[in-house]
View 1 (cartoon, one colour):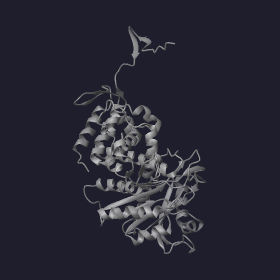
View 2 (cartoon, one colour):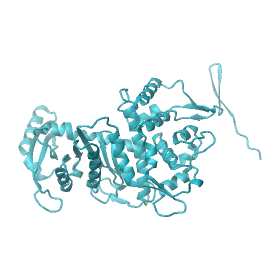
View 3 (spheres, helix red, strand yellow):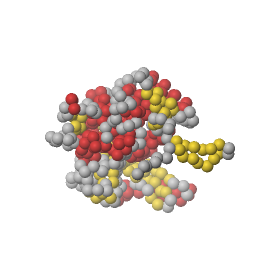
View 4 (cartoon, one colour):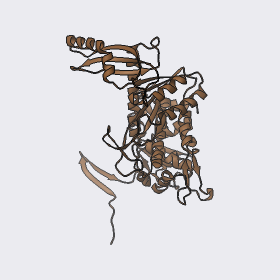
Length: 459
């Protein structure tokens, strides 16, 4: 039986003109802006170094796709909005993605398919006939901090490190699956650390432990690496009440690291700010507007049980009355009152940690929550790939978008406006030519970003 394929599609006429569509436009890509990511990687030297963090047991004579090509294909795919490995069954034919991944032949040499990429994620480091590539966790962790250090032309005087946890919901029977009462779901509880908008740590964890579990080891590792580069830099650690732990604060005090942590309220703390709360209530009664009164005092937990404080520490309190109810808040800090008055410490320093929430949301726009593999190790690998996609987009924002109207744009906005550009791809002996859409509305921005990247010095 003969199968006929329709080649011409007629639509309703537009005034006197017929409207006809055909699939004869040649090789078209929707990711023309991916060239800017490629230029960013040439400045950061990120993906070649990421490939060096993998241990390879394959025979070189039988290899069609190098580790660098596999890693680049996966990271560029996430940055461009392709979350699933299934997407790569079609993407492997895209000449632009072939070029981004480092294929010499962009016309006739397909990229890796979903099965090859899946084996890359599932390897656990043990001898296996089919999975012969595994990642070196310590190497990837070190690379994240190294890229951050290289972003500074001179040693900074002060760094503020933000630490926080979030939830990654689970919908299967993944390894390490536990129910978390606060999030009311089965989930993982990854640990993130940022300095500004740059990521320093992305650690996948089970959710059956404290929010601060394992954070001290990560902080020790990162601070040690930062101090090798900048021995005299002042470091401030900032986090919510989930990280207000005696062990962590004591280590900071012994290692020249200042901290500002939220402190969970209790009845004893509430009684200590009774006069300030009364004053705030009186102000609210007179004006009907939210009222704040700040105070500070020395505080120590009453019982020396496990987790109890070993010494008195400075606590800053915000006695606030809003909408007819009390809203007290507390933070504990090692910073002195001479440098940080109570109100400034709370409003200007501590509250600024809320910006980290936006950075964590950006991880989700790069599919860090796609933790559907069976093992935690494979899901950690997926999380690393999303993290590297974020480092790449963050580098584009820092180097290319500096001074433009999008220099503070989030990753999803950068992808939509700057990376998803329709283009016709033509390949000749001497060039790969992208004819991008003439109606692209941000052509002047693209031109400025290209100029900024070309002027930036390589790492």
